[in-house]
Every structure is written in structure tokens, then in C-alpha cells.
Length: 327
Image (tube, rainbow, N blue to C red):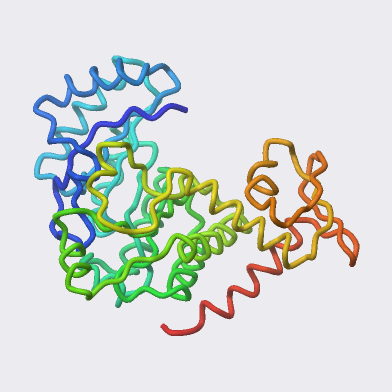
């Protein structure tokens, strides 16, 4: 499936989160003509019958005329023969799911960011964890797929709070999740806090540790991890002040999870599909573990063979203890 995005930066947002500068993140302005913008994006991204139109940025369902825009977008999608529409919005702004469904919306991405109220309040999100639960349940009951966004290291966040948030989202069984560490963008309140010493961003090492554990939780529950890390190109990277940015962040996160697997099982050999060689041993070459091709992932160590799924189940159980602390 191919995503054809158009952006509505900060549009419809009733709150300005401390970390957000949506224009800086997307380098886009509000489209003057939705129809023209959709056709331009369709051509630019080489759209086809396997494409979904994505209405991104801001809070789409809080736009004053969101229904008119959605109807216009739906007309374009049908004319161009695309599969349907996905959109991003806040959990407290899910309105009229029947209208969404009737106008081609197949997938909604919910910006939850955290399931801890004090973290949401400190970040000036303006919604509650219960809003997230309600939104996911409403959309799922209407037959619309749901993805949930989570962020790490927001103000007042801790590792155990991020782990707790992951377990709470996993309970809702969304169709997918997206996770990225907080980056400090220019012209945000978070930048002011950082310059005054009120906020300390994560190191890359810390972010890899937190996010790899969060990924473990979702993998164990067979929930698709759609994206790890916030997309940045050369233009937008210039507006990142500080934070755990890396162009291969997702690859590093998965390598960090496999490292935990290899080290904790005292692996001597690892068997896995060849496509995973880079993540498992390529980025963990200091462990000097022999890689052998296999259809499934398992290690051979001093205590015999251990499968990755078997290890993952036990590892995630250990994370549940961490999720009870500091809340």
C-alpha cells in the first residue's frame, strides 16, 4: 500500500502542545485547494489503485469545515481510483464515525502520546487516557482501522511510564502503533524550557533502550509497529534543536531489542532469516555471534536452543513489573 499525504499543519488544534511546531515538522502550509493538492500529491507520489490518501497534520476532525473537506477528498479518491482515506486526529475529537465511514475513511491515526495523565498535562495535550480508550473503541466498533501514536521522554515521562503506556495501548488491540522519542523543535515551548534548563532530552542510548522495550510489548501481542522514529528530511532536520535523532533510528531500535535477546540468552550462534542479518548481528558485531540462515529466529547457547518468541514472552512478562512503578 502507498500513502499519498496532504497536510493541514496545526489546523483544528485546540491546544498547542509544548513539543509541537507542526509547520516546522512538515514544512507545509494549509492547502488553498484540497482538490488541486490531492491531484498534485497523487502525481508526485505516483499514486495507483493500491494507494490511500492521508490527511495529516493538526486535528482533522476539529476543523470547522472538516466534513466538507472530507467529502471533497472522498470525491477525488473515487475519481482517482484510490483505496480510501486515512487521517490523523486527537482522541478527544473523534466525531460522527458513521460520517467518516460513509466518506471513505478506512484508517484513523490517533495521537495519544502517553497514557499517563501527569505526562499529558505537563505536555499540554488537553485530553485524558480515557479519551484514547473511548476513541479506539468507537472507531474499531465502526469497522475503521486504528493506529496509535506514542512518544517517549515527554515532560514528566519516565521509562516505566512509557512501558505502562505501551501495555495500556496494547490492551486496546489497535491495528498498529507508531513510536518516536521527543525531539526539540525550534520555536516551541519545549525549546524555551530546554534553553532554560527545565527540560533535558533523552540521549540516543536511552531512547533506544526505552523504545526497544516498547516494541517488544507490541511484537509480543502481534500488533504492527508501523513506524519507529519521526521522519525528518534535510530541510526539517535543520529545525531540530536537540534530541535522540538518528536517520536509521528504527533499525537501531530493532537491533537493540535483538541485542537484549542475544546477551540475556548467552547466545553463541543465532539462526534467523537472512533479511534480518543486519539488525541481529550486523549492528551487534561486537558480540561475535555466528549467524546462520533459518526460517525462524532462535539462538544456540550453553543452555541449548531458545526461540525468539519464547524469549519475548518471558521478557515482556518481566516488563510488567516495571510498569507498576512510579505512577
